Length: 176
Image (cartoon, rainbow, N blue to C red):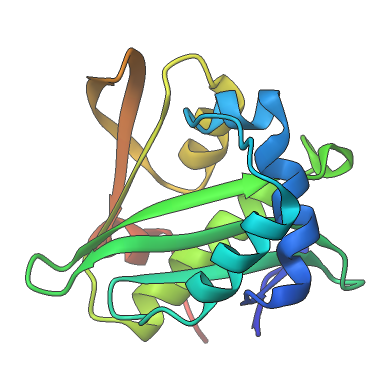
């Protein structure tokens, strides 16, 4: 369990499947993720979901985002981990709309970035977000990410953002 100010990040578990399925079937959430909307049955989704929970953690770490009261409201993680290059890609999604625009995403990102830089030897975290997803871009900028490029793929236009260990250290409060 990784604790932030508003959220807790924990390893994904099978009981998260129902929420994840609902969020992946949601057209707006799929669009914000630049992904196709899920069309498979829950039974098929569950088979793949269980298998994915047991995959090796050498190239990715996935977490559920919970409120302090224990409600699963989204997911985050880092993936495409390259220890040779010292970097990984970050992803976050608040699936429960009742928790949008209330600081939960920002706290989840800050908590995850803090965890990555404190607990791994990675030096750079990068991400991509849709060029029109201004809410996400504001969140990432609040967390210290800066824009470094634009990118087009499969008809989607993205802003690429990054933060490195040196930038993150500058933003950490001095310890007494």
